[in-house]
Length: 389
Image (cartoon, rainbow, N blue to C red; front, side):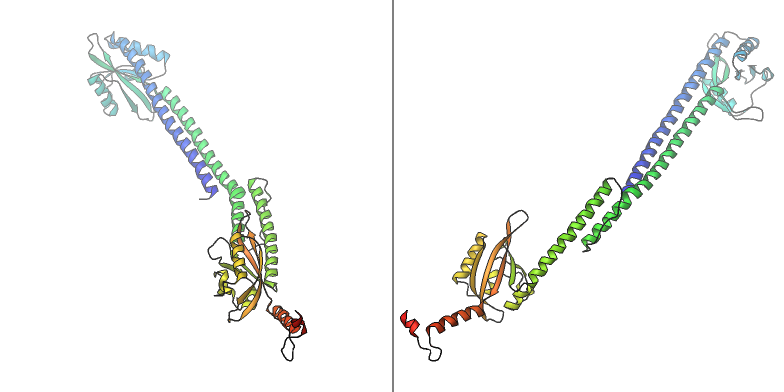
């Protein structure tokens, strides 16, 4: 998953979680507030019902209704056990029976068991939706004689409006959060993902052998610093490889045979030979690499010079010697060898280099000169110089 996607997902998830928790909290707040409103309405209605219970005639009930109507613009009525309205803030409804329906059913349940209940009257052409609470009215013998309905719609509407405003605020914050997440994704895509993609592509090209590789980023943040470091590394690698190629060409062009072998592996296996090695010995690189350094002397490995070379390799030091070596066709040649250890980056000897020089011709010439100095060229007999010695 890309960085921009991760950041967007995290930001969006954060706002969704906060919005969800906030919505649940508001819904819980709404429920608690509704319970508080209902409880308040129940207490007020019970208080009015208690006042009414001390009077037993409809006229006095109506006095209570008139008293409340002067102080609160809310619907308030008392319904007897026959479902007739015996008192109402709207006197036109007094004496009429309430209609069959959900409202009458709620009143009947309260008249039966004395439990307060809430109910909602749907809106009509004349009246809006009304929320009421129904409580029982008792006589002096604590018998249910009527039911009192008390409207708490105004308080409920204020609460509903507050909840709607708060929910709107939460929705606005959530929308803003999503927009911020989208903006963050766009910003990260341009300032992080794209530069990293460029750096990744450049590194891949570098790993595939391309050397003239650079990243054109002018940002002044950490990614810009990383790009600058990458460009510096790429240039240093180009210079290093150019230097390495120069040395490699020099080694390949050398008149002397050059061989590189491991000092840390058993038998000192050969890892590199140049073209001059093939010219002198007849062995190609493929035929040579992996073999031990003693393969050029074959069975003639007891010669003193070869033992000196082996000892120098074990002791990881320089040594010079003239060996009797053998070409691929079996012909011998005099091999002037110089070996020296090659240190690793940590300063430890891990390889050694051997430089060969075929001195067969020179050595034969020297032997001929020495022979002619002591023997007659025509007769082959010893001359005066040898006899004098």
